[in-house]
Length: 285
Image (cartoon, rainbow, N blue to C red; front, side):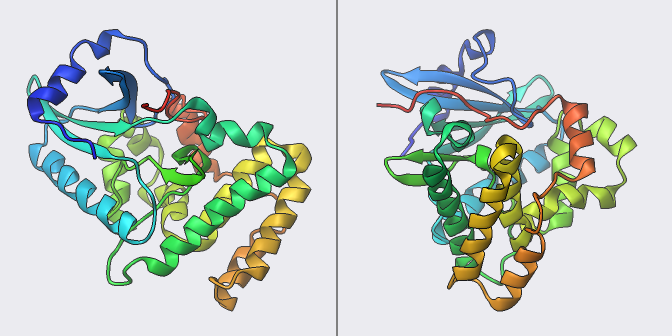
């Protein structure tokens, strides 16, 4: 369990802004690698905003969101969140246990043999099914099981991208995405609010969660798309965790390689984000 006082966290943060980014591909945050003794952490710095009430609500939601995900069986690395003043604004900071570069699924998938690729996909499919079946039906919650949000550590999947916290309905999440994105201004001007759903549907709909994984694998390995589609369909057909209606909905989207929504491609271009892993750093010893 990560345990920091505010002072200890600030000490860990001191000077990292002048160091090399662990990755420049985070959509919401700038991730850095930092050490406390010989233990490595990822530090994610988010866009400072003026609205202190918004920041406080995000911090509360984040803790509750992690609890809900863990209660549904999703493994999440130790994570610490707090906010700090930045001039007249407030900045959210997340400190999290880190993973080796070769443990990130986004890095493993392009080079994996077909049997290993199938195993990795089935692990994520299992995680999706487990979340969907175990989540509290009375709780509005989103979940984004994409390749770049997972690492495989000591044989277990770990879901490490907990921002933005999604313990809310889709409409409220869309508003939060725009409020906390460095690119929220131009996106608001160019993209009608209803089209943001094309991006966040994958966080709230079971069939889109499945096809998001299959589509990512097909784009990373277009020469193997036929095999990827086939073993994805096989999983769905044989799954005891899916209802017949759910299977029908997913299979209807797996007749050809799933494509990214055009609006998401536009947002990626606006933000300069190309969809690679958010972090590349060794796991702590």
